Length: 240
Image (cartoon, rainbow, N blue to C red):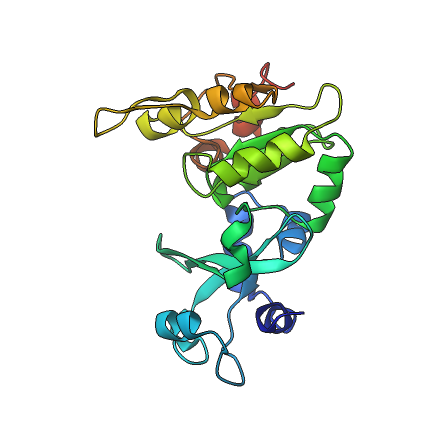
């Protein structure tokens, strides 16, 4: 076990942080599964120079942050993502071994097993879209966050490699804004170059994928407007 995973095992989630996540659509079971924790500084200096430069020798600059682990497909912790409580400031830290791994929010060992077993994979941008969408999809499906409105080459290779069961598919649920739709369908970027979207790239590697229309900007905003009922209504009729 690496030093970061060992430290995360000592952390807990403060009551006010848990309340915030519940208010943003998280279920208690999902908070536990994703390992969402309130940061507490290390007892000794971090062995990683990049971590020390970004967050202080013992991570003291992460005080007030809520963090969740990032895992490799084999279940090894390769970093974390997080948000400063009460703000939209976000951070992500990756261990060196993450360089050759796909970075997904929500990829936990039990989710990986469900993907192996044939789960449909719904892909959103971030954690506060992931939590609300979990209320609307079948219990056998999973939701992953790609961290931004695009799939990396490593994301595509992950989906090509592990979605092998008959009928297994990807459902793209990026935001209904220009960036999100560009990430799904592609188009001309700011340099004038044509970029493929997620649907084109997944089709190329023979992964079945769709991007159903839903009502609202994104699952997180829909949740804020009306909770469970609003999310389920927005996705009614688009479930696979």
